[in-house]
Amino acid sequence: MYYIGIDIGSTASKVCVFEDDNLVNTFVYPTGWSSVKTAEEIKKQLEDMGVTEENSKVVATGYGRVSVPYANKTITEITCHAKGASYLFGEDCTVIDIGGQDTKVITVEEGNVKNFIMNDKCAAGTGRFLELMANTLGLDIEEMTKRAQEGESVTISSMCTVFAESEVISLIGAGKKREDIAYGVIDSITDKVKSLCQKHSEGYNYFLTGGLCDNPYIVERLSKKLGAEVKTHSKARFAGAIGAALMAKKVK
Image (cartoon, rainbow, N blue to C red; front, side):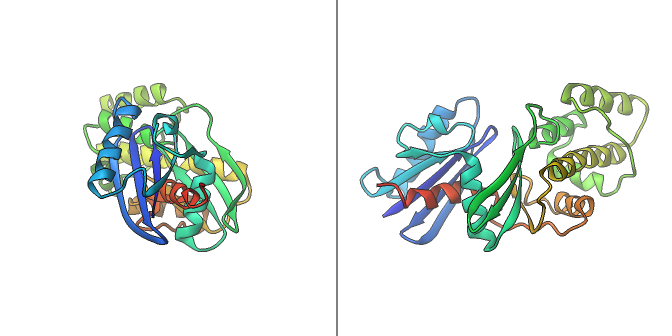
């Protein structure tokens, strides 16, 4: 029996496949403009792997979870991230999920959500903010974080993405180096995550999930801001999908 977790995010869709109790596959699809079309493409790839409606249970989560018509159940990403992080981390933790649309901080105890907080409806402090700022600097995210490591303190003070972009353009016009501006952008994002964690006020055993979990510099900066080690995992980006697949085992 296959248990499938599909996490349809605003920028990327993550899929996790369990065969009985074994995690056998994970893959990512760009969500694109249509979550419905993305869900159809995911279904085709699953069928190519031998996964059918007859031999599987599917749980969908994330921003576009309602766009997966073949899902047996839909579950919120908060619950799924908690389950997935607990599976990967192996102990109680505070999950920091920097997603494309929002950032979530979740306290997980014994695999369950104890408490959580999300940022308000603003891209600041999210992966989307980082992507937009990188585009403004003519860089991709990987190159931007490399440049940031060579930069010096520049402050991006605007809380709004639109104003922050204007601020970055002004800094470019003033002749500031891209390395310094990149440093300022990363500093701004990690500051906002730190502020969210402080509002949550239950931080311990920090575990980073989401699309930025593979970025060592982001992990390093977050650890420094929070004054505690932020851990991650090679599969941390799939935490939501893994949690959804684990929940699929309970679907009857």
